[in-house]
Amino acid sequence: MADESKPTINVEKDGPLYIQNAKGLILLDSEGNPFEVTDDEMALCRCGQSRNKPFCDDSHARTGFQSEVKAPPQPA
Ligand code: FES
Image 1 (cartoon, protein in one colour):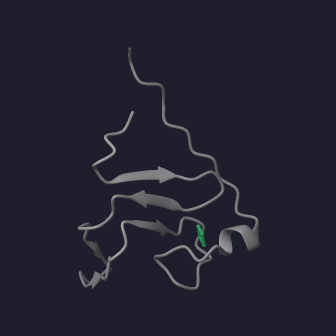
Image 2 (cartoon, rainbow, N blue to C red):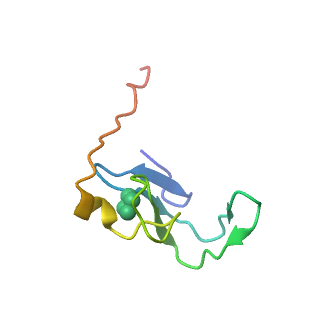
């Protein structure tokens, strides 16, 4: 179980990378320039179709993006 006070990234089924507790995270473009992160939650595009990259704009639903990523089982 994740520590609910730490930033957590969920790989959403057929959707974005959904980040909770995002406030304070630094998100940089390819040249090292920061995006403004003001919300405590954000979704980053994983389908490549967003018109507002790197953020998700729900284009994944319109385009029928399908991807379900499962973490490997953790050792007991
Ligand atoms: S994952 Fe939502 S627009 Fe790409």
